[in-house]
Every structure is written in C-alpha cells, then in structure tokens.
Image (cartoon, rainbow, N blue to C red):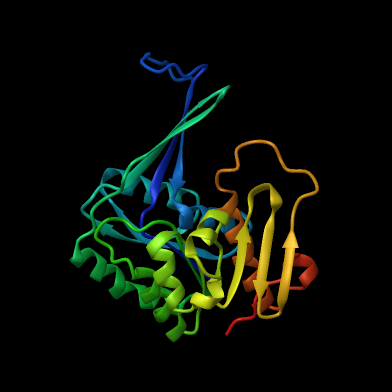
Length: 267
C-alpha cells in the first residue's frame, strides 16, 4: 500500500465563465469540485491506476467533511485526522482566454490536533511500503514536520518521497528521504544539491524541458518530443504518483517494461 500525507489539503472549485471582467458580476456556466492538495492529487492518480492507496492528513469543518466524503465516494480510503479549523478551498475561474486562481490560506492547527495526527501516523505507516509526503504546511504545524514523518517511516521500514517547498523541504531533506521531487524553482531555492542536504535520490521537473533524475545508480533525463497543450496544473503530482507506482512495482517484481521508469532502490 502507498500512504499519501497532505497536511494542508483543499477542495478545488472551478467556475466556468464565458469571460472574466474585473468589477463585473458573472453568471457561471458550470461548477466542478474535487478533493485537492498535492498528496490528495497523488492519491487520486494512484487510485485511477489501480494502486492500493490511503490518503491521510488534516481536515476540518464543512469543507473538510466534504473533501473526505468525495474521496470515499470515489473509492479512495481516507484516514484524515479531524481538526476544528476549516479546510481551505482553491477557486479557479476558467474563461476561454485563460484561468485565474484564488488560494485560501488554510486553517490554524492546534498543538493538540498535530499531536493527534502524530499519534495515529505510525499505525498507518506500518501498513505502507511507501509514504508520499507532499504539499505546504498549514499554520501551527512545525516547519520540521516532514523531517519527523520521514524518520517515523524509516523506523517502520517504509520508503519516503518528499514533494515540498521552502523551509518544509529543507527540514525534510535533513531527515534523508529516499526521493525528493522539486521543480526548477524549488531546486534553485535550496542553494545546494538536494543530495548534499540529505536526500538520497532526486527527480526534478523543468517544465517543457522535462525531468532530470539524479540517483545513486546514475543520472537520466526525460522529455516529450512535443510538449502537450493545455493547463499543466497537477502535472507534478501525476509525476510523483508515477514515481511512487514504479517504486512499488519494482518492490513487487513488476518488470521494467510495465513500469517504464527507472526507480531508486529502497534502503
């Protein structure tokens, strides 16, 4: 099983409009909603690919209840720790000329709520071969949260993939995750190669230029011959899901031709 952890999930809302005019009232042609946040997106892709997955994290309020209900309705096992604060929403207004996004800041997590998540986390990890830690940290969760979660996973014998940014990424690297998946901006912001900061292996994404993998077994690049058109939102999360699936495929003896991905060996 693959466990995904999303500490700051969101309910993603998309409003379709014929045109977006600042200062005007708009009639919405259509509304779409789906559970979101980086780890949740990874879980959704893995579930669509038929991989056993559990989505965990922190969720609260009516929005959090809706997010959990929509995951359950989609057949995705969820193990979110309830909190009092309201789970955030992301709102995208999509017009023919482009999309405009609005990201809510997310809830404040109390020390007791964070302790409750930590208390339940080891039992989830013991069921998992791999843990994906992804996304931003909500207010109240310590900056070294991912470092602690990596250490608990390692103690339980589970591998870890980390996809984060800023202080959360830097602290997480110090704990030695098996794989990190930064984008070009996140990579540049570190100021040093991730391996020097503690990561074992790195797959970085560079937009249309593709992916660069730097592992203990060697380095590779991969890119599409022709970039795909459309909105690239979520492409990084799909990449993380592919990496997670490949790792688990390797651990189950799946052939390289079926995974089509070189994946780091577990520790």
